[in-house]
Length: 399
Image 1 (tube, helix red, strand yellow):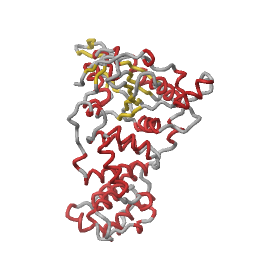
Image 2 (cartoon, one colour; image 1 turned 135 degrees about the horizontal axis):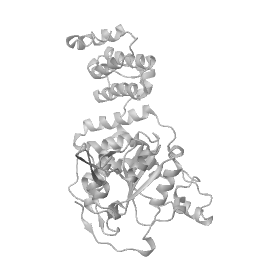
Image 3 (tube, rainbow, N blue to C red; image 1 turned 90 degrees about the vertical axis):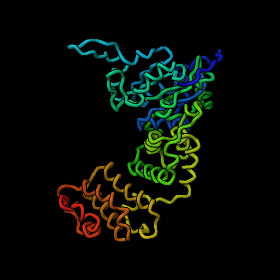
Image 4 (tube, rainbow, N blue to C red; image 1 turned 30 degrees about the vertical axis):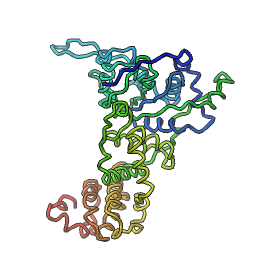
């Protein structure tokens, strides 16, 4: 349970700004790093919490941003809810007790794209936060399953300045990406002079552009390779409850980080840093980024085009392991075509002929399972891996 803290209200900052104050997301300038991180999290469908003082346009900006991006935005204020408000009312149906579907859950689920916004998260008492836990993790409201078309974002004031504020419990905090909200003062000055009449919020598409399967796979390969050599950072829960109320490393939060980083521009280092800190904490983020600067993983897209660029005999095992698994993952995620499948096979054969069939063996199993039905298994692949797979009869069903 979080620690309750007293606070004093500030009359000048006791409310979020009006909807017109959404000028913080004006299209006159490039989106700020925290907005790029938020946009990537929404597109990756990773629950996110925005941290900031009262009155800096978190609620108004997110609402305007969501609507401009084509979402139906449904706001649920935790501070005025009870834990039972997230279950629905019980009723009997043919001898079985069921629960009614809450109207806000139905509305956000029925929209083409829904954005569920939990406001004032840290002013919600622990019992309400626990009721939100299943929604954040399993996307279930009572007995109603939210579809994948619904993204979840929360906003929170630091417990020290929130009215009857509570720190987030570690189980909730670890399910969220944490982003510190930055007030765009220049955009606000430009908007306030014109009454915000000409202000248009940016959209996810305008901020992020089109995503890349190859980049998503590359991010996953980099992080998993790092964690193989730094297993102590895979799960490291802080003992301090305040620190545990933000981002910290766990298999879940690393998975969240992979998903969000995969939606960012590969060159967007500022937003990537915010994503990593927001998911796994500053310590793990710093170690990973330092490792990334010194590592030299192959680009799977370049290797698919020309397997000869790889030093198959001299490369480190972790580089080859990350590469071949990335090749198989790209094929799975981008859709199997005969051309892509044959290119992937050529990489595995090159790996085996370079003296490292053991590194490619697990990925070869995936490629065999993905083989197009009308395509014969190449003799080069049979020859390269016959010794490894003959004993298990892998080839019999792959002709």
